[in-house]
Image 1: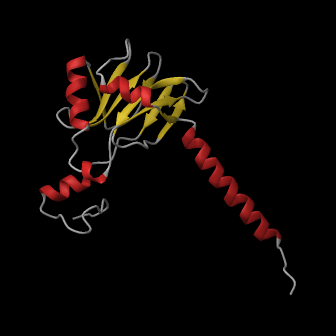
Image 2: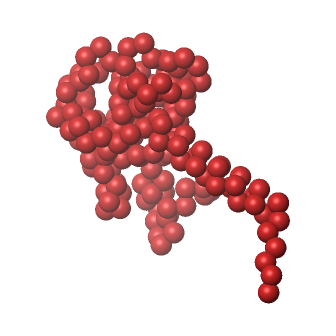
Length: 170
């Protein structure tokens, strides 16, 4: 039996592989998990001169972002805050007690890396894969972490075997 390899088949495999590799390299170029960052947040030490932002509410943050001087954040869902060690302590403790901790989701620290390989800031959250890009020189565009759908479903009395449906439109 003879196998025929077509140009279309080879082109598909090459294109698929290139797309997969590009997607993975794009992600890895912008965020790098780092235990030292997590340790610094968890010891309530501020990065001097950095601007701080939170996603979520001030009473119930979902993530904390420390942005290096010279960089700008151009995203909705993040609000600037005047950070103090006491406020950082309250937020870090709140992030450590998320309602779905039984799901083995614990806060992580990460470095945010710009397209030149420089550290642009630091990120701390249970949501460890933010989507980040640089729209122009030193301007960071970052998605906000998703809402805690499991928690909101509990509040609404919709907890069950399939309570983690984050796209439920009800």
